[in-house]
Amino acid sequence: MSLSKVERPDLPEFMTWEELERLPDEIAEQIELWDGRVVWLRRGPSEHQRFTVRMRNAVERCARKGMTEQPETCWQVDVETNVFLGTSGKSDFLTPDFMVFRCLESPFQDVRAADALLVGEVLSPGNTESDIEAKKARYAGAGIPWYWEVTLARNVSAISTVRAYALETEPGRLPPGVRPLRSANYLIAGEWTSANEDGIHIDFPFPITIPWTELEY
Image (cartoon, rainbow, N blue to C red; front, side, top):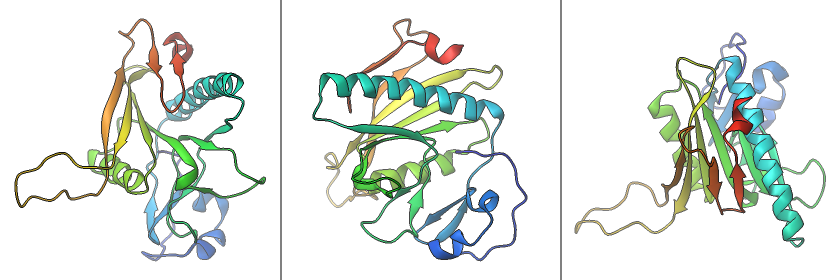
């Protein structure tokens, strides 16, 4: 959820994908389109990129192991890759810091929300709660089964907490006359810190086991 700082030009509130493609790469890569609305990605420290890559590499290792044990499966793990939320068109997309998605039929194919199994965001101290919740809600509304948050420590170069959220598509019981604001939401399914000596362990969307030392070096 962050990139190195580049001066932002004065852009319209709404743009199409085609208009975005005509911008210089160093500007376009700072932007997400939310139903065509221009949303600038928050900038962060170098630790953001460092721990994004470490998480991606650790999850990819687990994905490769899972594919060996289940040859009928095929998953890709990438960083900062656009996921398009609709079934067509490209003017509604998010750019998670790391993502797991089903292998696509051809190279250079767009990743759609229906292809995504897990999206992850690395949160720097500068990320606001409203920014985090707004993006999480869009992932949930798109039906992506798993959402991970990796929170960086404030005073040291380290990961503070990793949380895994599972998609809940049927709301729980509410008082009569009360309706949920959103049709889908995430529920926390796992939380780990360096105090968990066994590291990160979860069996979904495939078995993931990450020793904490793999994220510390």
